[in-house]
Image (cartoon, rainbow, N blue to C red; front, side, top):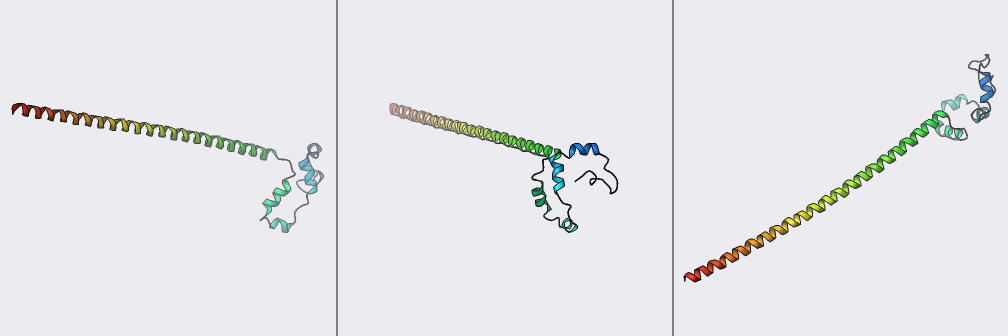
Length: 142
């Protein structure tokens, strides 16, 4: 494709000859020379154009906009990954703390239960001692 063909309107010369002298050496513009203009029937069938466009653009170098978009997407993906990892670590820590708390509560309940059982034994022992004294007092009276 020559710079004359790139004119915005037919019959007028291309006004950026100095830019074309530089750009024509880049792969993006070399590949444009090889492409043929699409026919009207092809333009009407744009259903599967996305697949064809990807195939056609594979050999083209990545543009600035797409490059920035790719970097942004990769950054967002890594950021999301980091956030997910932080959330998972926080959840694991919370689960660990919850489990420790449940274990402590269970141990306290056991201690309380043992204390209650011990108190009950002491109470029963005092009652038994009291009954023995009562029996001894009754025997002493009799």
